[in-house]
Length: 139
Image 1: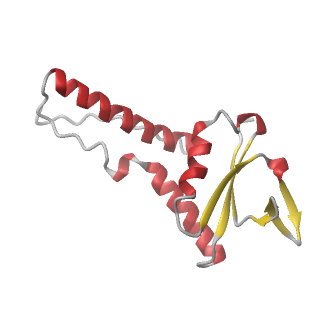
Image 2 (image 1 turned 180 degrees about the horizontal axis):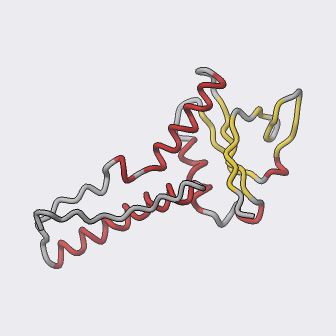
Image 3 (image 1 turned 90 degrees about the horizontal axis):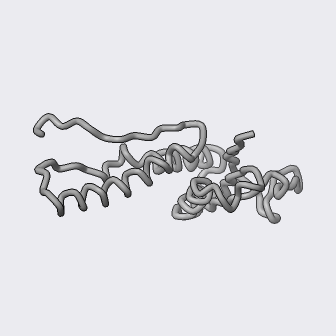
């Protein structure tokens, strides 16, 4: 077991899905590993919390960096835009918007494209200017 190199990774860079699937996999893996060790101790120290295995954080940081390059240190709204019929069912998009909301001065909101409007030359959502759009369409 000293040479154990196994791990699972889900990197689907086309959507926040792959990023979030990896996070979910780590949470499940950690619980399963703990249960297995309760049944029969396995003398292998696995780090399920290593930042490399939580790529959604890096993805969020990338979006925030792009917003900062455009807006400076001003607050901003990052719109997570997806098909209307997926807004309630696609967990990873909801999780991405929630994760964006954990950064001071940044808001994340999940919406359908028809919820966006043009006001005074700016794209807005519910009257609020949008700083950055992440678009996740599967069709």
